[in-house]
Image 1 (cartoon, rainbow, N blue to C red):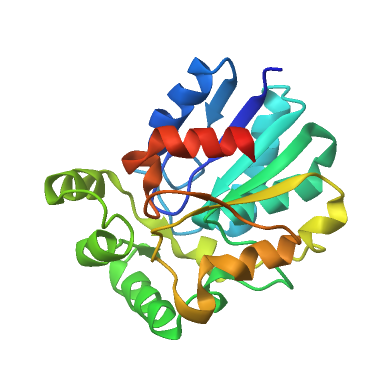
Image 2: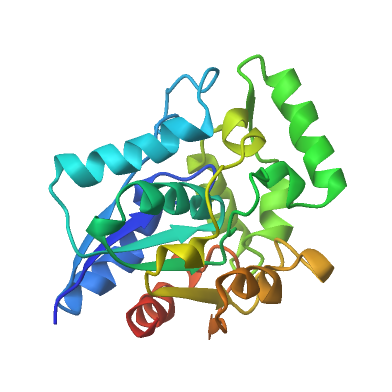
Length: 238
């Protein structure tokens, strides 16, 4: 039966990042819609944006487009807006899928879910930016996010990233645990994802918060670019 996938990108990305995966989902007979959240279009002003703006945008778009029975997918930081939106309009959601994503808990912001040195770097970058935003350094992107691509591809994709509003990282969500919604939920994990490692690794930390076992798919944190067919297939199985 055809599904409607609403795809929410991670930090520094717009809906464009989902295109290779969305095309695969559509070829399989499904509807796929990728959102670009406020502040993540080239030229947007990120200075005053807060996490609630991202959540409210997802909710507003679901209502404006009159979308129901949606499979809502979030990548990385995108786990925050999909969780917040699901708590506001659970009647529109068929299923939640977290792909190598943060699962919010206890009002805790992303800055408290990453290594301390990463959080300090983000704070320094935001302060120096003049726009309260974070531009991801190429070396961090190259070695920690998309290490399975060749350097020309890494550089091209890095050039497409936009500054991430610091408010999106500094705010938490005051919501009950995601399982309290009673919605079907899945966690998909890219097996070569080293963006978070050690005790702060994506698995088993975040799937445990959902009470599920992660479904594995090959590739890095950016396997939407490097292994889109396999990622789309994993989303269809989740």
